[in-house]
Length: 463
Ligand SMILES: Nc1nc2c(ncn2[C@@H]2O[C@H](COP(=O)(O)OP(=O)(O)O)[C@@H](O)[C@H]2O)c(=O)[nH]1
Ligand SMILES: [Mg+2]
Image (cartoon, rainbow, N blue to C red; front, side, top):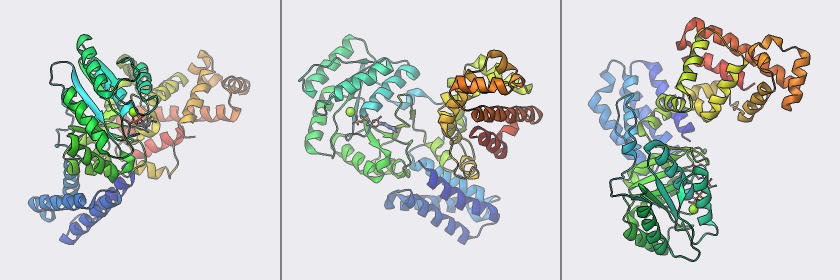
């Protein structure tokens, strides 16, 4: 998502940066580029128009052409306008996320969250994801219940999702109607002292009156504090129009945009707030229940402008790494020590952080690194294979890689179900990484932020 938009925008802004002094015509040209980039990203025309008008107004106020670093100023204004378009207010850099702001749970428990949207938009999955996030991040106990009595096995699907997430699900009673299920869910949530009740509803292929009438009934009965519309980002402007009609018929309080992991152009994310007036609260980033994040306008804007999303990266690292382990590892690294155990650890951490590809996407200058890699993609299954190779080694071999002679390599290949060439390649990569670790020791951590060094490192990992 956002990749081609990001590429277009950074290219045209880089053009400005190279110029130094800017004329009115340069600024006009940049605005035209930005407008084109938005339209190509499938942003609705009126939205793109308003964005440019807004940006122009800001530029006049800032007296771009006369300013000390005009290009930098343009970039900052584009960034701020993007943040606004995405529905956020500029926040202080480094401000920590406040989980309380994500959702309104101001109600006598159980606070009810009503999930709605078209069929296949990701309601059931997002219900599980949200319940899990409430449990893990906000320490809230949620009960989930499915009102989808139409699609075969829809209720069982939610029960299965809940089981995976270790969340309680209202038992299914065959033949019960949505209104009756709602009443029973409310009762169960009250009696069970749940903090939150999430109601997963039925979808339709299209917005239809019957569905809206049913949702209105449920809404009246359940009196939700949040009514979240789940929309599929891959459907672009359709997602925005669907959200608009749901909002007009039943009133929603926020959007969950799913499939932001896909290769959509980003138009839905960019137009949602200004078209529906409702904020995107969460984004679905994959099929797994943990692939779900709050939607931070500021971070997305930085990602689009290729300034990197270092905050998310650091948060994710902190989540998966145990501090003592991380410290021990950093210490070894600083001493230039690096054996195959360290390599294995790194692979596993990268895996836990969502794989090399997803990490790379959050680094500053990520777009440029990807370009430098020349379309070469990172094969995550390769990482798994490499892990298997290291696991087939004895502890002694892992800590003293010099022991790995030809016969040991053959044994390891057999043990890991790979070829000797694979083992050789891994050892070569290890040696490159070891050399790099020694370099890092010499240049300090700052060297890590150098895109060329990164490219070399990632190139090494990709084989
Ligand atoms: N890649 C990806 N797939 C998703 C995401 N959210 C849901 N899905 C998948 O979309 C399909 C439909 O989801 P489901 O929750 O059953 O939709 P519902 O009909 O609205 O309840 C399932 O295969 C999900 O795994 C997401 O954020 N990314
Ligand atoms: Mg469903």
